[in-house]
Amino acid sequence: MNLKQEKIAVLLGGTSAEREVSLDSGKAVLEALISQGYNAHAIDPQEYDVINLKKDGFDRVFNILHGRGGEDGTMQGLLEQIGLPYTGCGVMASALTMDKMRTKMLWKAFGLPVAEMEVVTRDNFAQLDPQLVVKKLGLPLMVKPSLEGSSVGLTKVKSVENLKSAVEFALKFDNTILIEEWLAGDELTVPVLDGRVLPAVRIVPEGEFYDYEAKYISDNTQYFCPAGLSPKREQELALLVKRAYDAVGCRGWSRIDVMCDAKGDFRLVEVNTNPGMTSHSLFPKSAATAGISFEQLVVKILELSAQ
Image (spheres, one colour):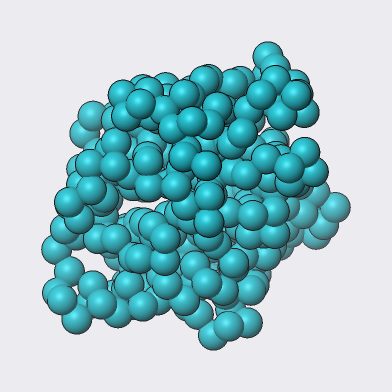
């Protein structure tokens, strides 16, 4: 069936901490699809029961929900149950990559480079010994919830005295917290489209790290694409990203974040299985460098759901 003859639901908004970003992404995706002649409609799961999509005549889903409920395998499972094809990763990869801790454990098992970390849960928080953690991982440290996206709940910890309060803050967002060694080198993000690694984007935040403010609000965060890596380093990064993408079972499209440590070695950070598609977003920026317009990118992602 010609995709332009299908009725397409663009899932946007939702109920996660990233709702506002998803609304922006969804609006851009919807406009791109309509401008290319697709019969696309905005569907916000906060206001519409997605289980009715098939009954209401929808044939396919462009899922641009971010965060829990839309990017963690639950929506993917529901869509499979009602028999609707959808964009992006399947149930397993979506559920796994939403959990930063288990993603890193898997990468580590595959021999891929990740930051050294300690895991703290709500249950063992009382036993947290900041002195021991700092002795093992050094200072500064990055504290982050395992299951949140869009840099929600992150803190840079510069002293042993501030570690517990940073973990307490992160526990407001999740039951599992990662305390990671600070990666002092370049921050990079690398999109993958249909198994093809697109040009890396180098991120230079206004502040000390790429937090929610830098990601979505600040106009002073700088993005460089091409990233300024040598051809050899760009190739090394692309090979690493493809291995990381395949290890967790991604399909369609995803974006993988990578940091460099103080020595310049790459460390895998996390996977975004439904990357942002706003004016600030990095996947479209990289695609444009590769000669792919925003409209072409959106159509390609939709087409991949039909394979």
